[in-house]
Structure formats: C-alpha cells, structure tokens
Length: 195
Image (cartoon, rainbow, N blue to C red; front, side, top):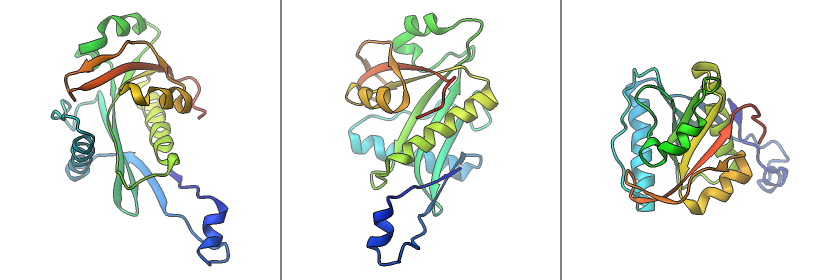
C-alpha cells in the first residue's frame, strides 16, 4: 500500500548516483492459512524475544470480526497486527478494562482493538509501523465501520503511541495475564488518519 521512504543521502551513499530503488512494502490482510501461520510465528518469536508469554490467537481465520494484517517486504513478513471489531464476545481488553470500554461503547460508536502487534527485530524503519497502523485503520473503517480504536501497550511504549498515533491513555497500569506484563489502555477516535 505504501513504499518505504528512505533519506536521499542513503541513495547517494551507495554510489548509485541517486538511482537507488527502495524495497516495496506491501500491507495486506492475511487470507491464506500460510499467511496466518507466518503472522502467528512472528508474534510468538517477537513476544518471546521480549520475554512476554503468548497465548494462542482466539480468532478463527473465517471470523468476520477479526482481521490479521501483514507487512511484507520483498516477500518476507516484517510486521503484523490483528484488528478486532467489538462484538457480543467483547474485546480482549475487557478482561482488564471493562469499565473504561463500557464508557466508550455508545450507539454512535463501533470499537476495534489492535492486538498481536509484532515487528521483526531487524526492521527498524519508523515508517513501517506507521504504514501498518494506517492500513489497519483504513481497513477497520472500510470493512468493520469502526469509529474508535483501543490498544493495550506496555507503559514504557505509551508515550510513543500518544505522540506518533494520537492515542490517549484511558486506563491505569495493570498486569495483562495474556502476556504476563504491565499494560495501559489507550484510545483513539478514527476520524483523523494523519500521522
């Protein structure tokens, strides 16, 4: 959906006379069994690297309330996340933040939750995560009709999500039993996709 944007000085430093062609980043929903398996493997690997526990994904590939997106570069998966529309089953964040989510649930709002976010440790371009979030928001608005997004993040990353993606913290620090790590709940209306 978007291409990596690299600084001009990188192209000239390669001796290519400015003809350097950056690799193309493609963000798309995982639709095949193998794509879902690759996304799950990346989540397990990156969560283990961080010392987090991982639990199996609760959604089925055919579940209409969940979409797993992958960011692929030159055919290799470099990042993934799952976006889930609020439904009668609720959201994973309801386990820790039911009261805060109840305050967001209104007839005019449809919530989605971002979970199972993982970026390969060798992928350092800040545009990668922005492209993945932009695509997930666009998908969630177009397919799920959502108006608001929530995400549970480690408190040490909360400032980044506020600054780069426009989230606001709406929940206090709690321990998330799914990953056995501290978490805070962040919220963002999806009316403005500029970041």
